[in-house]
Amino acid sequence: MGQSIIKTFDISKKYGERYAVENISMEIGRGQIYGLIGQNGAGKTTFIRLLTGLISPTDGGMELFGESGSGLERARSRIGSIVETPSLFPNMTAFCNVEAQRRLAGLHTMIDTYEILELCGIADTGNKKVRDFSLGMRQRLALAISLLSEPEFLILDEPINGLDPKGIVENREMLKSLAHEKNITILISSHILSELAQLATNYGIIHEGRLIKQISAEQLQAECRRYVQILTDDAARAMEALKTRFSVEDYELVNGGELRVFEQTDKTAEMNRTLVEAGLLVKSIHVTGQDLESYFIEGISGSYGFM
Image (tube, rainbow, N blue to C red; front, side, top):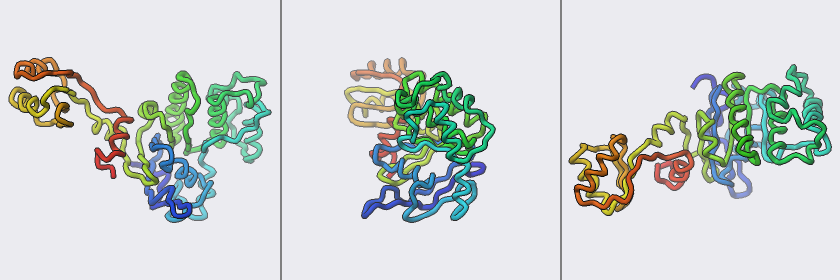
């Protein structure tokens, strides 16, 4: 994996009798864009609050940049974050907000405020007060503030919430640039899985407070293979016909009427002809493949043995 930015060891957070986060062991390597996936209430924000030190764990521990225990506070000076609703000064401009946060944090970095605002796409807001900003503009301002410390590790909880389609694309390209050009490691949670799939290099799936799956983008692509989806009146008989004609071995019978063939995906026309000649009713036949969203939904339902 290379150098680890963060490791957690069976970290848990319990409120009363209920675990919000339970025994999560996770490792994130330098340069990764790590997508944290989970339903509302799954424990994503609680886990992020544990990483940033906003709450303390009930059990377990962590290492950040190789530091643990009393060294975590020092290590956290090397991270930037947006957690839940960002704290902003509504009666100030974007520029004044960034400068105020710089002074409050006691930062003396060389990075220029205008440079940060331009990077985040809000340099042209002028004298407009934050109270008049859209939710998306507030998100961009929060991201600008999180970059003030020139972090090596950026933790973002739903950073594209409220952005319009153009803003989402701009946000994606900006985060890719931060990761690739500035070597910033990013942990990002988002419920917009189609967008996360275009950004993340690695994924962690949290369900009911537990980390049930970690997978790289390359592994995900291999698991979400393309296949020929065939809907017919008799999937089992269709499979026998394709075995005889094409020697198909890699397939799945989903139910009585659906067949998935994971090989020879360039032969849909020939497959269709074979099935028709065998007297089968072919309702549809086409090449398809899972996306991150369907992989996640099927995974937490137990289809992939996540749990």
